Image 1 (cartoon, rainbow, N blue to C red):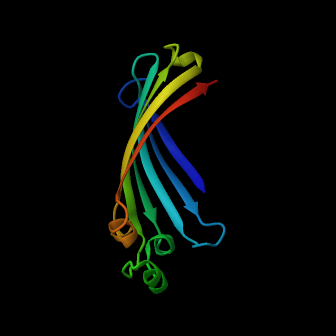
Image 2 (tube, helix red, strand yellow):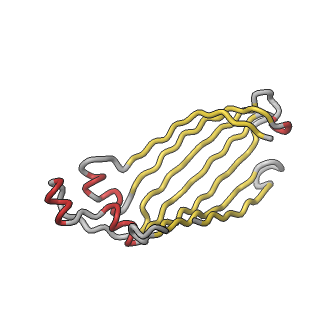
Length: 154
């Protein structure tokens, strides 16, 4: 895939930034020959000398091939699973938000070293990704993400 972005520093204060990005993925092995585009926007700002907060919003746009492969229910699949037939189309598939807080362990993010971070996020499937029987009858369109990590900056 491809990933590209533009970052704009000094949006609300001299040390923050706003980044607009897009990630494009496609099937290279021939399973479904589909494409996924993920646009996003992230705002990052330091809170003092040793803490950084990032807030982001994302979306996922899928083409018809991807939607059909992952969300359609064929007659054979319906007979095997008992799920109703479903034909999925591409379009806006998911929207979400993410928050990340990073804390430098020595209190000075400018000198590198160890840091800890926590993240939380939420995304919701919409369109045929939410309407497919896989999600509507056996899953949930709501997805939550929580994480903690340890990092090192050089």
